[in-house]
Structures are given as structure tokens and as C-alpha cells.
Image (tube, rainbow, N blue to C red):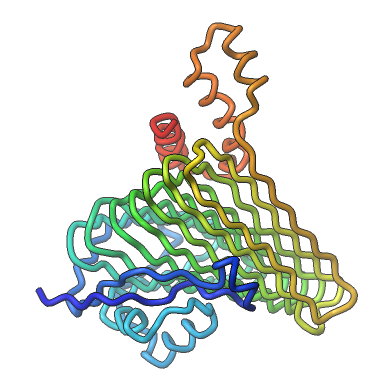
Length: 352
């Protein structure tokens, strides 16, 4: 199989910060191939309908990629044309589990999610497992009719990957996204949610374990458009070994989003002197009557807490594990798929 490899820019920030911070974009090698070996295991209930028919035109995919502002070049976008199209329509209270079993070569997919009826809720679990050259995914979520989508993306593979998410949220609708990343390779995650409607709401959580020499890059943006819209962006993760992480969180208050509220916070737990961490929170504002805030903390594990647990008979690894479990359980409490939570906690214990 012929492969084309080139270095490209990814995850360009919404606005440029000082260049010496080296956080405006990232660069990595990308594999482009016409061959696509996407394999999916799908478990759904009767309230979720899906098909593999291609319903998005090339122009529509181009438009989506422009809206998410991913900073990727034409080669990556064209791979979506040749990938799998999984169209998902849900009604009432639905649950969908999709496992992508990466084997070899390139895995590319477009997940197109729409609600069918009024006041519906979809729980969507997407697991990325196995190994291969690369995965390149696009999640397009359109929420209307007073409905809600909860999406959990669990990346636990040995492949380099690109995760792109575009959300459109109408009045009184809700999008919740949780990115869980324990990948054993570089992962670039770009998420942009448009809160178009009045009292629309989004909540984006990031949870990760970044170890060895891997690089995790996040670019999360909430575009506040509707009146009284609410956005929360939260990140929490562990950095160890020679891991490298950059987190760009942006709350963008657009003209007309009266009484909108946006908040972003990140907590990084550093377990090695050799890690590299960058956190770039941004608040952009074109409207006066809004509330915006951001915060960031970077710490190691509290030595006093470790000493206390050691005095109660735990060894050092067990003590650190208990403390870290407590930090992440609150973040993962909304995940109804216990298998995902157990995998994360087991990998957390292995990492420390």
C-alpha cells in the first residue's frame, strides 16, 4: 500500500498568543492513504437508528471542517471522503456503544448525530482500541427539539489520532462531551460547540493519563451566541515520564449573547520532572452583559496525604492510587458505562 507522509499544522488556536509560548499550533506527521480499514462493533438499543449510507457531501464536510477550525490541511479533510459514514438518529432515551477496533493502515470515520423527536437524550459511547497507522475521526452533533446528547470518547489505542468534534446546540438543548485519553501515542483533539439557541448549554470535560514520550493536544472552544447560554470547559489529567500536554480552552462571547455564562478550569497533576505542560485559557468577548471566568492549577500529590495513608498501612503506590482515584471519580461519575471507568482506573494504577 502506498502511503504519503507529511508534516502538517494541527489545532491552531482561535487567536494567536505570544509566539514565544509556542502554543498557537502543533506539528506532526500525518499518513494519508486512499485505503481505509475502519472496523466497528456497534451495540445499540431500539431507540437508536443508524446506517452507513453516505449522506454528507464533500462540500458539507469542507464546511464542517472550517467551522471546527481544526487547522488541518486539505489532505486530512479528503480522507473523510473515503472513510466510513455512520449516521445516527435517536429518540426518547437512547444508548449507543461503538467500538472501533484498529488493526492496521488508516481508519477514518464521520459520525453524524441528529435527534428525531422532542425532549430526547442520547448516551453515546465511542471507544477507540487496538493499533494501526492512524485514526482520523469527525463527530458532527446537531441537537434540536429540547434534546440532549452525552458523548464519551475513550481513546485507548497504540495509534496516532485526530479527533474532531463539531456541535450545534439550539434553544434549551444540551451537549455534554467527555474526552477520556489514555492513548499510547500522540492524540490531537479539536472541539468546537456553537451555542446558537437561547438557554443552550454545553459541558466539555477532558480526562487523561499522558505518559512515556506521548503528546496530547487539546483545542476546545465554546462559541456563545444564544441569550442566557451556558458553557463549562474542565480538564483534569496526570502527566508523568516524558509526557507532553497542551490545553487550549476558549470561551468566545459573541455579540448578542446577553446574560451568557462561560467558565473554564484545568487541574494538572505532575508526577515527573521531565514532563512538559502548557495551559492557554482564553476569554474572548464582544458583549457586555456576560460572565466569564477561568482557572488553572498544577500540583504534585500532597505529601501530607501520602504520609497519612502510609501511617494507616498502605504502601506508597496504594496511597497515591487512592488519592488519584478520588480526584477522578468525581469527573467520571456521570459515565454510566462502568467498563470504561474500570479501565481508566486500572490504567491509572499501572501508570503510577
